[in-house]
Length: 367
Image (cartoon, rainbow, N blue to C red; front, side, top):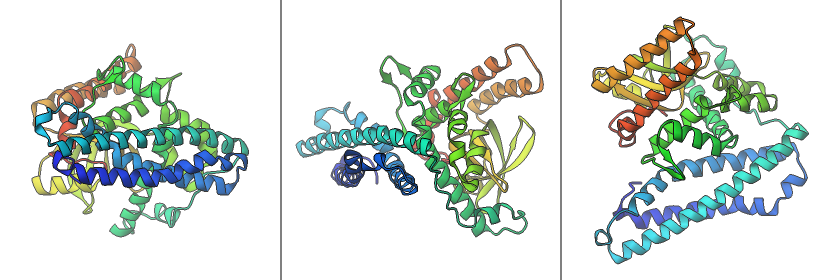
């Protein structure tokens, strides 16, 4: 759905539907019976609720930015009816947001009980093990994409829980580091800018030497079955890079080179494959990525930049400093790497690259 003044009536119906659906999960929170009787079924119920919640959060992530932008429009831009509908949309959104916060708080409380009782996270991924043990020469495109979609779905589930680990500290630390936060105000204009901020916060902001993904793994990995544990482990070992795109491959991905270890990887990414196939352009891809047995994939937020552009050349010159740090044990290596990575992420936001992704002028690289 296009977010515009003309579509406010449709947006209101959309939010009303989301509000109705999430009210069901809120009723479970209010009853609170599950917390008193932790069982394997409880874990399954929690997974179901969190999966639904992640979909709601994703579906309304773009709405907040739009509604906030509407506050700056002059009254003569909208009709009286549109102004009333906008107010209703804003009120509905605040109701939904309050319910989501309540469910998040409840899920943390329940998860602690389940962890204490030892009820593991469900591990039902059909054909996952057999496919990952198949050589890439024997797997067909359908099975490859099935495995990719399974992996991406598990990552989305884990991502919801990662956001519960230390959300306020993560947003504050990342916001100040990327210079998009001042006091209580977060200067984020688009959904991809928020994705970029969160991705940076999850993997680059550390407490006691560990990022959020590593801290989550340390506390929760024993609750995962072997199939999902493989994906969680890969996420814990996620790598940062400014990848060089090479050639479209296998009708669903791109060959990329990571100069930090000088390896060529097969990155599954439908949008990036389509863009390179049509335009023949080469990109750098600022991202964190994980390696699975048959392919690599981004952690969820990746920003492409044209290699032959001025901003692309500037970013590559910064990235070359990180390459040199990897090769040599220099003074303050960790601090210098963090500063260079932070500079690259700041550029994606302050130079408008993330905005370009949100407006779909560049491939989104998150599907």
